[in-house]
Length: 201
Image 1 (cartoon, rainbow, N blue to C red):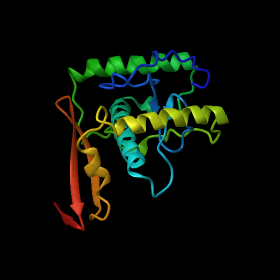
Image 2: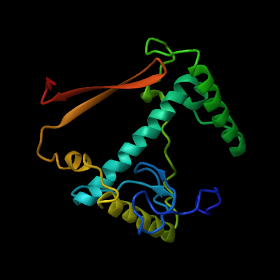
Image 3: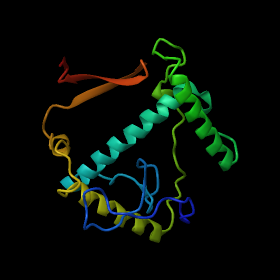
Image 4: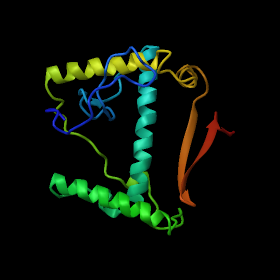
């Protein structure tokens, strides 16, 4: 990624932003990853302004989609429970093969949480990068891209109506959300149990 040789598509404006600048395709990561032009991470620290908190919230939602998809795959294929000690081109083949096989099996087999193979997110190996965060120029380029996404998420073109409600809940009772993942009838149901102030709601 640092040398731009992973063959990502060409930069293009974001959806509904007809006059916006062309931005690169990006991967989403958490705070353990370095900030780069093609790799977004959250804004660090507390006391962030609203725009940065909205960005962090939207980035977190995108990461949850990726983690859920990976969890479904790891639920069926144990090779994803540990580091894959293969050449990079073979890792790509393994991932493609498991996705194809998973899709074929979905038509004939169902998996439930009663199975001993049911995915537990705590069982996965954490995908952490090294602490080497790249060059200063790489971080500056990444910061510009992140700021552009931040501005887009706060604009009429990129905002969604529920984002403000999610970040303006400061001072409200904290809601703890537990996610129970269950694969039934080829559909991943996300069952959310909410509790506010110790009472079930």
